[in-house]
Image (cartoon, rainbow, N blue to C red; front, top):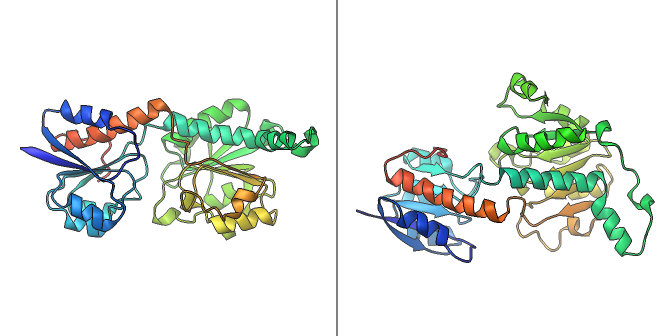
Length: 319
């Protein structure tokens, strides 16, 4: 039997890694490549597919209900907000991601954003290039051991981030309703409730997945509870923060700054006020990237499919 594997969309220059995984498998694979943008296009290509490899194209309830043969949907990345998990589960389709490919990269990027803000590196660099050779352009800067880094989420990436932050002297705390205080205490982290960690953090780093309950988790009300010197860091997903509320809070001096790698709409809208603010650092959803991470991501995403179609279990199954 030959299994049809549909790649819904991709932005890679080549598909050598995926093709090698499929060609070396003990099953026969017909690897079909598409560049779907809409539900209709996914339905057209995926209707008879046995497996779907997905990057950004929408795998909605309507798409899943149209699938006749599908056994597995594998997504490039950690987040699966492009896929209707409930519908897949109802239909008995395995959904898998690659949760560990960018652990070092994302935690490093969050650390880089933190350090850039804590030492005002980006701000001072810009000031010098504008002709202002004066350390006072970065006032105030505080010692790390006088500040608290609060972390939203306590999965692989935030745990690794905390491991890198603690030796620098920062106090650390975390919020995660699914992790016990005892488990956090074992690695020297204080567990806090959401409102508490928002109130006490000098730096608040976001690492929760984007699901219904975390959409606009950081909103106008919660931003108003933060310290005036607080900086929010987001390397997770843009819609976790209400971007309009963030811009308003920054413009009014309710918080000191933001360092974000993601936006509610990507690419970020050219009219976004965040682009004009000196107290905002923005990178283009690049936290996940290194050459090594990209290769690992692509191989593991393809391997998820081979394992399920071969009758095995993938360790990365979500449904």
